[in-house]
Length: 116
Length: 406
Image 1 (cartoon, helix red, strand yellow):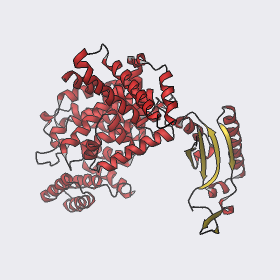
Image 2 (cartoon, each protein chain N blue to C red; image 1 turned 180 degrees about the vertical axis):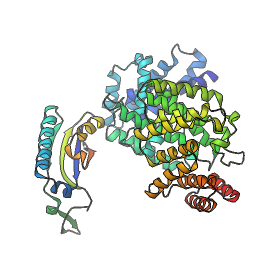
Image 3 (cartoon, rainbow over the protein chains, first blue to last red; image 1 turned 60 degrees about the vertical axis):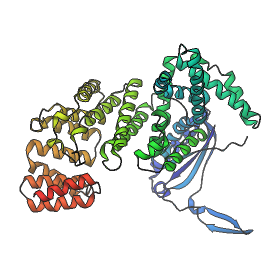
């Protein structure tokens, strides 16, 4: 079964990390990604640019409206995701708990809706 | 037929736990279980009891479920696959062998108490599926609407299905955390029945009894020290039930209770369990709280209580599970060991940090120590503060009596 792991970090916290600490954090991400490729969990994943690059788009009465910023202003921001293949929710939680950001932010695990 | 009634009471939860595993769906399993008992009502009086009623019920339930799915499949192609899969499954009747049935019950416990469900849903699902309470009974015990409870259960089952919460005992690495969560659910159920005097007291007592039954089940299935400690704690607290309130429902504090009303059987069982938990050398917060309750239970009179030992246990508990409430209890025990002034200094220090400023019991404990020191004005102010912070009838009446007695 497929799950999406949405990674929420406090960008502020990441931006104020010392360089050595930030390098180590990135290193952990590379190692984590490599690890879940080996175990067969990995289906995809990307990091996102900071939230100030976000644009929200909606169409009402056929008219496109575009606003600066994310859909919801929150203390922690969506910073990236992994799409994984897991046996069940326990397996998915295991994987999510090893995402480096889980230690400082929050990872939301959502099952993918399968249309058969 | 009384035999069937007895078998229903003894076996229905076990049969359900196994059917959930075989059918992979809570609702389907429940339907299948009721079908199986309906067939039993018809056949057993005529043909006699089967040799192994539980295995008979599981296999009958499973075949009834497959039949029902096949009938439904004529209208809905998507269930055809499920019916086929169930038929070819090797899960025949022999899978109802004793040890795998116990595994199924443990699977059910861990699934109902899965931390991915809300705490309210964990409690509702546990009482419904493991204890077999009806939605109406759960609602009455928690003073909520049956529709609210029903909705919680429906949502929880939907999440179990859609997010694929597995029907399994967690892996060894996750077991301690997951067991903690299960024990917390059981303790919440117990306290709901034990602490609340409001509402229908009879049904709330049932809630404590259910929690103790659940505690026994978990100790049978997974005799971990903390599970044993929790069962001991519940038994030792419950042993004082008859002594802790007047017939009018007014609170009687531990030191004023008539100890001859304490339930000796529960105390004997609780003390043995405390011992069993402590020799494991893996001692957690529930075992420590049970050990404290055991010291009280062993004291023939309030005056004969071994306060030095209680203080020592609170100190270990404070290291294992630090919290301002444990600190407050330790301060109260020190007041008993070393006199009210020593306890008051500690309580004032906790309150000045602001940690328990809104906790009525902190102010009533402070009031009590001021009263014993003859500081009547301070005592009055603290009792009044406590009174402003609680809505519970028995606690309010207790505080009012103390105020009047100053």
